[in-house]
Length: 146
Image 1 (cartoon, rainbow, N blue to C red):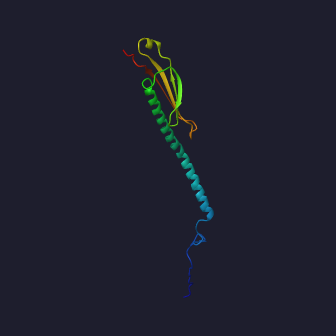
Image 2 (image 1 turned 90 degrees about the vertical axis):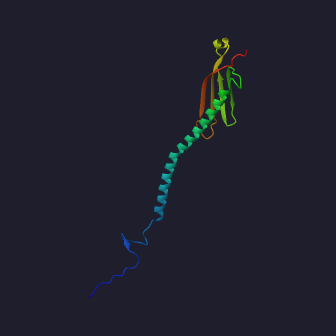
Image 3 (image 1 turned 60 degrees about the vertical axis):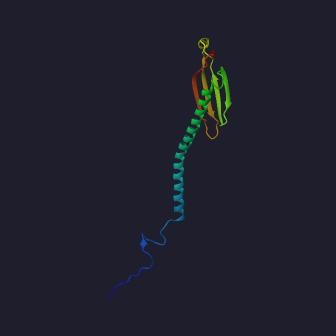
């Protein structure tokens, strides 16, 4: 009986390419990294507005607290005087206060009041449009002492 004896050397062949040669080339690897980098850029670009939105909300919250504190002290800590004034908080916020004319009918009755508008805005900093908070209220002047 004569038969052929087949001796296989090395590894099995896969689709006509030797197993030693099968793998990723440098170009394929670089393309894969480029695609991964592009996908991560798009992903982080989508998360960026969420981060700035949270920062903006924090700035608005702080501006609202400053405006409320300034409005609460008006007529108590400082007199309620008609006119406009402005200033700067230590936290980097600017404020503008407008007090309307005291109502004559209320003044003649012994108590008075005025419309008050306080506007607190953050400095521009990293944000393109700095957040601004405005509060409008009617403040009563102190009752006359007897």
